[in-house]
Length: 268
Image 1 (cartoon, rainbow, N blue to C red):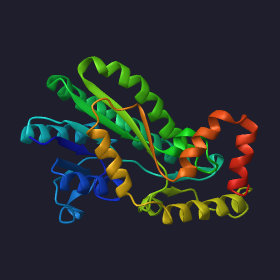
Image 2: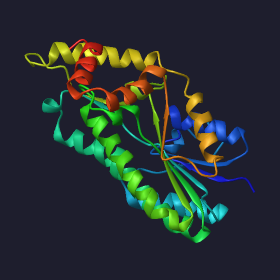
Image 3: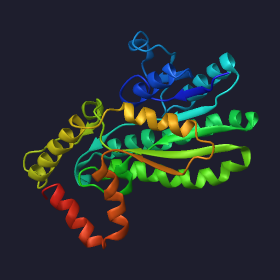
């Protein structure tokens, strides 16, 4: 039997592309969306209703997959939200929502799926993080923090779950041409704000990077390779060379030099 793959946030963007790619490769794909009725005719795999911030909806979706297939072999923790803005001016409820969705949400899903994977004696959990999680980026600091938290937590979780035959992996994408920019929260550009000019310029640059991003099929291919790898690595990065190289530079450059490099890049 082909593997049963469970993908959160599969109605659009990277999640949808991964779902379509794996479906075409013969996997039994189940995707999720907060509003599956809107998208059910747009994908060839089942879309289940799920909100990662509501544990009851997670339990219901997982229960339905298990009742239909008797197993969940792979979880792709993809659902997430974008957020931009000066940290000082970003509303606290929006900061909390970003952490609830990007960090606590994936943890809720992992907790709900692990009992089934333990029962099976195997499973693979792939957490979609971000290259932005490897560095504090100006006006993306909250987003970077949510993804960094998931990266580090996965490192610990991976060691805890190996005894059950469960693998856990991070995959960090760079900029991809998806609809993430239109769906993320942008702190408003406020008249009289000391950040208005710098934030406005950086926001324009960030949106341009997404528009010019790579084809998300590259992420789908990478996730397919990871699924087929017997002993996957802890961390994978997928994106433009300079985005991946920026992680290497952070390791080797003095902190102030790296900071100056980022500020030049963002024209700050």
